[in-house]
Length: 352
Image (cartoon, rainbow, N blue to C red; front, top):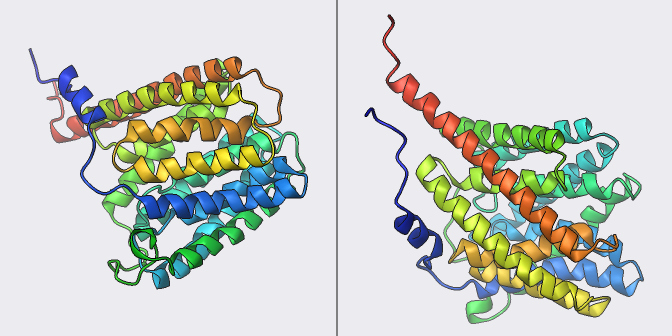
């Protein structure tokens, strides 16, 4: 039997998917993220427009970048992140009139965000949140004026700077923006690894969009986000299988959490508190265990994407699960194809 693609044993895959990674629980990052996403939602909820608040909360994703850099570097990096999120929202919202226009917008956002995030070495969460914002904006843009969506995201991004400045003055383990964090250059550097990574995720998003349209997925953006989340962190087929197991297990856990939350029908301030608690949980646990992180990410994403639509929670859960399976299949197909391509380039078949 010839050499084949190496597949890790089931026990080893489950072990790597379930174990806690070494490191600390990120309490400070959780507090900062919860405030960043909660402030715009709270402001618009008090103004009587919680639907606008959930869109503005997308701008709060600004605060998730640069948490491992000193404050002075964050203040240079985050305005660019905010501008990128607003631009992503604009592209998504103005492409909402057509699934094919949405596909082109998502591919463009993926390529641009991936080049910039890998080129500048922003670190997690990388290009994924720019694509998520564009995808949700395309969905929201079907029922909201297109120009309103990026304006709301801009409001949320501006408010996201408030907890960053406040957290810099908090004591002890709650301090996030201390100046004793490692300094790394912010200069843009383009090399072969950046190009390879950009090509991988861009191909995955394009294929995920096409598969969603062909198979009439429940929500195109759920398929896309699953695919890019796996492809962004996986470079070979072995680790991809670990990531797929984590994604499926974490999504299943998160769907159970969402069903419990949905039956409580949170509105107003309880909804704000719930969203903040979920975002807090994500940042505390995500770097220790991806499955636990998805247990918070999934209900938060479902809330941001489906609030106020009168959607049956069980229908949303079924759609999210099916879309997750499709997105995972796309990611495996892309990584398998790239690995076969690399093997062929390294050891081409002899000419007859």
